[in-house]
Length: 209
Image 1 (cartoon, rainbow, N blue to C red):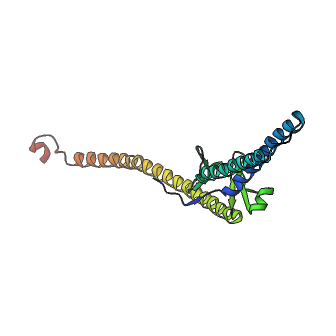
Image 2: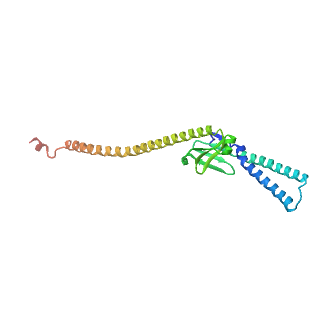
Image 3: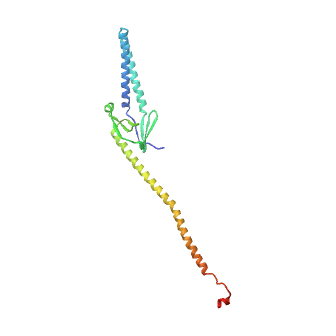
C-alpha cells in the first residue's frame, strides 16, 4: 500500500466560522419572531425568566454546533502522493496530477481573518481552506514538477524499451538471411570438389593409350 508523502488538514476554525454566523443569524431571527409575536401580536411583554431561558437555549445550541462542526471537519484531510491528492471528507475524492489545469491561490474575507486560503487545481478540485497557504502552494508546485519529470522519464524509458525490442526482433531475421547466403556458396564448393574427385571411366588399356 502506497504511503502518502504529506498529510494536510483544513483549518477547522475557518470552516466552522460561516456555519456559526448562519446559526447566530437564525437564532436572532428565532428570538425576533418570538418577541414580535408576543409584543405586538399578544400585546404583552416577555417575562425576564423566559428571556433568560431563550438566551441560554440559544447559547447551548451554538456551543453544541461548534463542537459538532469541529469534530466533523476535524476528520477531513488531504493526503499527497507522487501522482495524486486524496481528499477524505464524507467520501474520498482523488485528484490526479495528469488532470492538472491551473494553480490559483484564493483568499476571501474569512481567509484574511483566519490567515488561510484555498488552492485551485482545476474547476472541480480545490484544496482548502488551509493555514500557511503560500508554503502549501510551493509544495504542490514542487510535486507537480516532480511528477512531470518522472512522467517524461517514464515515456523515454518506454521508447528505449520498444526500440530494443524491435532491434532484438530484427536480429534473427538478419541472421537467417546471412546463413541463407552462406549455404549456397558451400553447396557450390562441394559440387566442384566432388566433380574433381570423379574417376575416369574405361579400361586400363584405353587409359594407357
